[in-house]
View 1 (tube, rainbow, N blue to C red):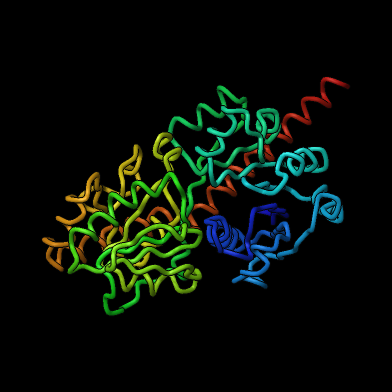
View 2 (view 1 turned 30 degrees about the vertical axis):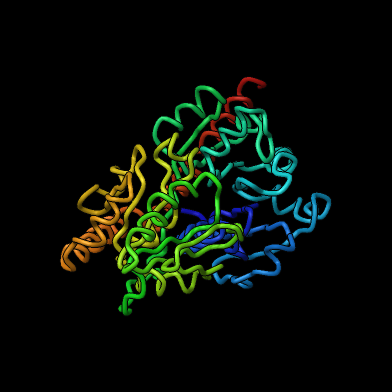
Length: 369
């Protein structure tokens, strides 16, 4: 197979601060490059990421920055000549970027939505921050963070020519299982989100209030200063991706909490789910449709609805049972959900779109002849 020249315009590759996009792109594109493809990543240069960059010079792609839409025109030729151009969700001025890419690119154009349920909720209320219904119809492929019935909805309701699931994943080399002394009984790693906070309160904060003998931590930025954390809940503002494996290794269990829009849509696994499992850390999660297609409840993951569900695990599970849960999840994720699996899937979908485009061009030439 020939090498594909791909340009990606994403929210961020350089900074993992306050977003889950950077680690998702890093794992996926590193694995995609390992398949022999050439990648240019274009990132809007914004101050909050510029001051928190933890990847300056990736070895798997070229990373360049543009300051505004006018500055993006510097890349007109490379975008026009690329085999595929992928625009990501939450790209600043994403509608204008998407329109310009669709007008400029001669190859396949795709949208990678790492926030599909949030995107659809925004579209339904007329919020076109980075995507419009018209843009969906003109993207050759809609790569979706969410699978299941959402893919049919994108095609049937919004007219996407090809909506394909492209879940987050993990780079096993970046997320190894480490042997560390356990520092916390239950951890949570994630940026503050108002719609996640009630679940975090129910499944971590309330258990902490009831179990002063246990140790908890909430790690991630942007939590309001007026939140009153129990004394046995430690707060860490930011943990760079390189330190995630050590964080998980120091966790007896870790908590997965899903945004409300993603719970409603189902089939929307967080990148943290894959990363923690790859590290062999046992996971307690909130409940949503489709989770059983990724990890088997009771065998690979524990599903919790109320504080007692969490405390029962933390207080009564034997160490052998705890380790078996983490090991089972690790086997499942490494067998089915690594970045290499996702890169192969994306490659196949892009090649399929290129073939569709080629057939359509041939038919158009035949009609005009």
